[in-house]
Length: 202
Image (cartoon, rainbow, N blue to C red; front, side, top):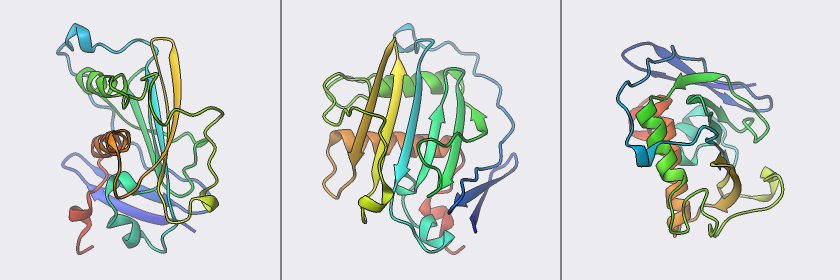
């Protein structure tokens, strides 16, 4: 059994499949032409930069129940590879080991923007050595143990450094959690995932 959810853009219709017991993925959109403008030198990502974020949360009973959630709290998996390919799957079946098909390709400036967030300092950057939620191991989290919470499993690599982050969201989310939410919202927007407002009345 699976839940299907649709959004429509000016270019084409994107079908996002909510995964229940077996992992499905959203249909790929045509790869967009790269932005030819050069990113500022200080913002240029290293050749080995990649990022993945898995959102684990409580199972909902219908597509509508997922659609009213903020995009940053909907279960799913987002991956950006060194070649700027964005891969997205939505639903509870999109665990950390699932590898979605291509959704689109980021422009060079979009990729640089994502790198600046991931490499940010001050304790909240995903590659910051002082990140308060840095974790050891493989990041496996049993969804059955998180009850009504939402958990982010973030894995990123850049400049020969890799870091794993596991953090829970809560009503008084700190800077690290807020940054993770904002990055998920950003990637969801690039993947044409509809916002809760766009889903109202559907």
